[in-house]
Image (cartoon, rainbow, N blue to C red; front, side, top):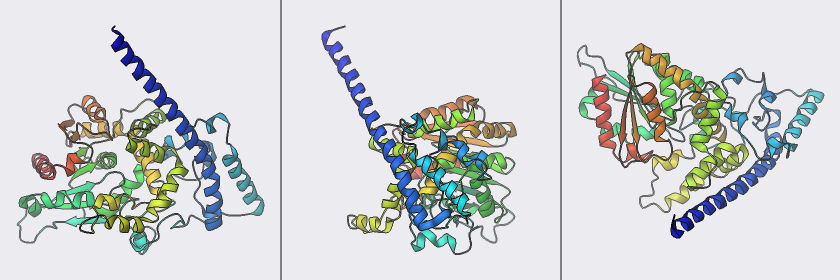
Amino acid sequence: MSAENLAGKWTRKCGRTLLDSITCVVFLFLDFLDAVLCVVFKLVDEFFEGNACTPCYCGKAGDKNGENKETEMLSESLYGRKYMLRNRGFLGFARKWRIYRKKKDDRDGSVNEGLMVNRWSDCGCQSCVSWMKKGYDQKLHVVVKNLPQVGRGDEAAENVIFLHGFLSSSSFWTETIFNNLSESVKDHYRLFAVDLLGFGRSPKPNDCMYTLLDHVERIDKSVISPFHLNSFHLVAHSMGCLIALALAAKYPEFVKSVTLVAPPYLPSAKDGATTSLMALNTFAGKTLWPPLAFGKSVMSWYEHVGRCFCVLFCRNHRIWEMILKLFTPRRELNFMEVDLTRHTHHSAWHNMHNVICGAAKLMDKYLEILNKSRSVKVCIIHGDHDMEVPLDCSNNMKMKFPELVELNMIENVDHTSVILGRVREFAKSLEHIWASS
């Protein structure tokens, strides 16, 4: 080996060591900061909300046993996240504070009167709380296009349900694909774009764990049952892919095709906890670079640091939108910029862990149901430059279920441009999938 190559190898090794050291220090600080913020938010929550405040996940799994009927549906990543300080016995004052408050409440005879519908740290503007008007159990917000026309003979309309991804809304489909479908599709298909639970204009209840079961039940009550759908296609992006597979497994006799765009799939391990924690490390692993990945890791690993972000940006989204409009020529914001803050910390946190991470252990079971049905076609579309969802996710699904899955890898596009950068091509591919199903 030449001296030049040896020097280059040594330099790269030193660079990696330096980056790993900085990463360790940064996340050590975040661990400390999150523990402190745990106590701060606990005090502030009790001041504004009393005993109705939502508990956090800083303790052990056993701390919440029996508190909720959906405890067994919670992702292991909620409690299984490894902390460099707290898991070694340091900074235990946050947990000691909860134990102290619990003993005090028991001694004083305090009773939890239920969770507040709108928390002090959430936005209370008209658009964010509109779902509360018709009652607590309001259905999901659904945009319906191309209702069947009268006088088309006996030909029944086909139905398509669109599910968006994480931190998005139904606008992801209505502002793009809906406007680029052919006239023949508009005459023969009913299109349903759903705001998933916790996003857009759909309910964001603070006593909901946002599990996969919650999403499936809400879609059933909001779309399938009210519109009497006995046959439909599914189109989903990112997080919505997991919900689409769960929905298809529940109604294999109703589903004609499932189109998944960048599905966050991982093969199930024997231990469900291992799969959930693997999903957390795969989709939001602790890293400093690139900046977007660092942001994802902070928001996914540190509950209270992430809540600070939501208080600053989501609670005050109207102010930030007004500022952004000053720098846009038409004084109009892109729908993706608006959707990014239209959620609560509670809804985003639980969707990340209980759907993206927790549902990973269930995907093989759902795919096996569809594989045995022999009537459902699963098509995957994935950009080869996707930095959000690794290409191995789609490749592994294709390898494990070769007869069920059809994989279409698109060159030179990433996680969003696989759709937004080629809207017309994507619309045509959807039409082809529906026509051939």
